Length: 396
Image (cartoon, rainbow, N blue to C red; front, side, top):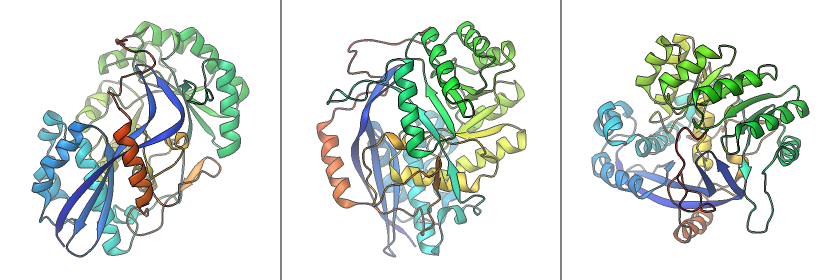
């Protein structure tokens, strides 16, 4: 089998209400949908982060991939995304989307799901966390979340609808005192749920330790990236040893894992099939964590259905990924695949069809591609409601 063509399409899907985080806001989610054709008539589906630079990278990689055998992942990886190129030139996200498509092709050719192709399935369903954000009101003036009362009410409705057992609270938006009060309100309302915090690295070490101290008795599952950089994370871990620390920002690449373990930087590495360069590479990172006694979780970057499927297959085949995965999926109002994924008791079933187990809805892809042409998407750190504001790290 040979690769004959690679195509990609930008798409923008609205969400219920604009999500706020420490240094920006999401008005909706934007991704690039990738299709890889073969001479045997099999087309694989992939997905990656959006942006002109990403499309340029795909254009750069395309001629290097035409004629290659999609079953030969290692040859392809070393040809187009060796470690030096990944680190120096940032090809990792574009390549990851292509790798999804190549695994989709392999699974379709073998008539087996991707999780079987990469080693077999450990679990049939994957638990996810209720991902909470402060939100701006939408165009109808609805959906705003700006205080503890609104956050608790929203969480009650979300858990009633989807059955989540774990809560992820995205903070770093309001002053720490207010967010501490919100965490305590969530803990009181949901005494048996796991609750994790993520301020996206905008606190000082002093602030992070203070928050950890004040939440000492409120059973935080883990504190994700309270500060920026391995050295700062190590200091938080030393000064607040009772807190489980997690990261997908300070620690997000293979070369980070060794120093992380040897220097007691953190306790949980959050895997991501995009950031680690594909499903197979993210699984390998999980196995490295297993060997080194570090827990594994899973990061979310506002996935559409193709990437959501990739996450499910990765989680299904990674034995030590025992923490509920993150997902933005419940914020989307639609998807570009036929039939959306559904939560049941806070979990999603792993697709059982060949390959990734998802099919493009061509009409929806065209619709949301057209919307992407009308929707201006700035940098991920932009906030259109607060123009010309620059957020520094640390913020508090």
